[in-house]
Amino acid sequence: MEDLAWMVRDSTSAWLRGYDDGRFAGYEVFYRRAFDADATSFNLEKLNEDYAVWTNERPSRLLRTLNRPIVARGLIALLAVWIGAHTVPAAAGLAPNATAVILVVAFIGLRIFHRKRKRR
Image 1 (tube, one colour):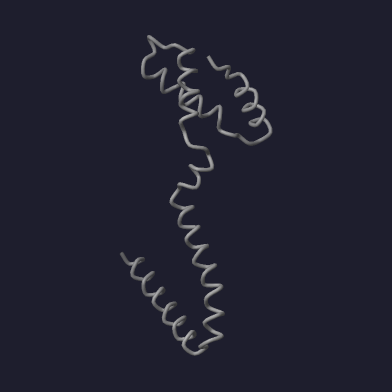
Image 2: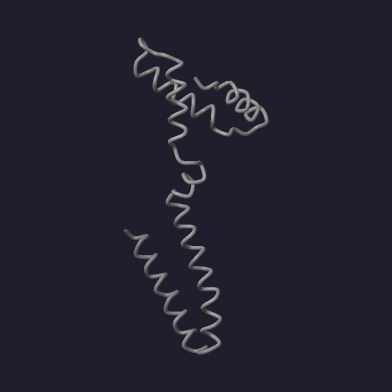
């Protein structure tokens, strides 16, 4: 059985300092689900072993955060801004009038697209 006392001490001290790292809350949710599922044959030692296996199988917090749709949208937007910041000045140096026309058409197109989305 894995000793989980370190988690209680560290998580409690983090809570007292004003922030929570989520480890104890995750264990508490796991414990309550197991206890609510079958309270008559509840075994804390087996639960702690299952929790150790469960935490090792889960992806890291960084991977879970990067897998969120909002992060993907933010990275795509950041990439689009970066590409635009490099492409527009180069294109404006080669053909300033054509670049201006393309940018005006693109911004008008975006306004129309967003206005249609809001009406739906």
